[in-house]
Length: 241
Image (cartoon, rainbow, N blue to C red; front, side, top):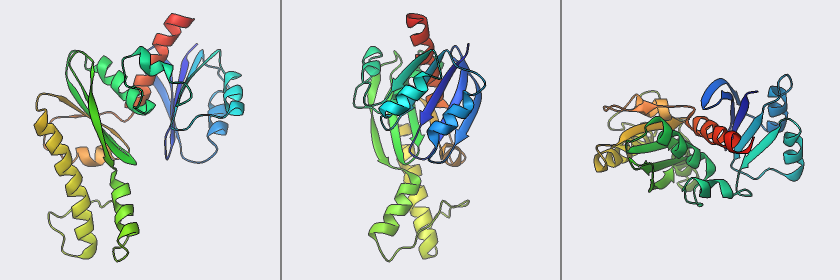
């Protein structure tokens, strides 16, 4: 039987079937009926292990329902803190960041990495060549910056992520566009210069958008969290089944 790995994020749910450490068919859902969507995936096939990484703890009723859909349920949320300790990852890290770290440890074994996750927040995590977690930073994500300017500076309009970004703004809107996007690019380039020998990995919803604007070699991995979750799930299956 295959395993099912699920990431419940701030704006969307992503899931994938996994054979061992290898991801198979993937799914994406954006809406409030996350439990119903998961049940639609398991309707025809029950997983051996279902692993769920979630930004919010699941309720007791949700947990009970999911346990009935698989042979083994592996929950990674604030109510189940023991998994991070097994892999030498600090407990303060969110589980999606922990899964990303697990993924780069496996995919880029023996190499130092800097992981940029472009979502509601922009997180930057550094992993040493021996797989150790060096530390990381958090700043507002791209859309969060646009929303913050509109909310806290009442005279500024709400601006969406632009397809093209001028080097300097020539209007109020283009000044905001250039300021936010250029600011993030300068931020990224600063981290890259700080650790020039690191493998650079982009993930998250805006990863491709910013990767296209960079002038150096990097990897874009849209399913990095799921890849790391599949690794942890396979390890769990081998040790507990």
